[in-house]
Image (cartoon, rainbow, N blue to C red):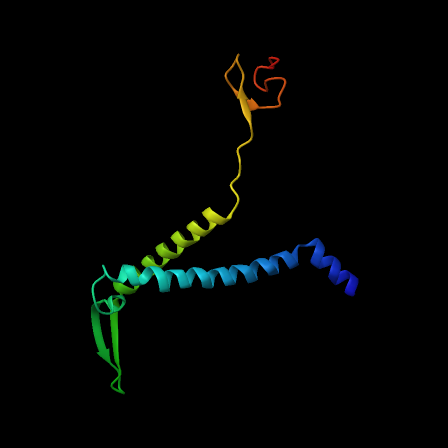
Length: 134
C-alpha cells in the first residue's frame, strides 16, 4: 500500500501540485502585503478622506421589533474598493510574473524566397510551396 501511494504521488504529480498550492498561498500573502502596506498608503493620499469604502446610497431603513435598524442600500464604496484592490493585486502579480518568470524566446525562422512564408531556421524545404531552401 505504501508503494502504491508513493507511485500515486510521483505519477500524478500530486506532490508538485501540493508544493504549488503552498507557494501560491505564500505568494498571495506577499502580494496582499505589497498592495496593503506599500501601494495603498500612496493611493490613499488621492482618495477622499474618511472611510470611503463605507459610502452607500440608502434605499430604505426599517426597524424590527427589537429596535434593530436594517438598512437596505447600494454599497458603491465597497464595490469601488474591491475594484481598486483587484487592480492593485493584478498589477503586482503582473510585475512579479513579468520579472521572475523566464522569457520564452521565439524559435529561429527564415523566409522562403518563393512564397514569402515563414519557416523554421533549420528547414531545408518550404512547408507551403515545397521549394528547396538554403
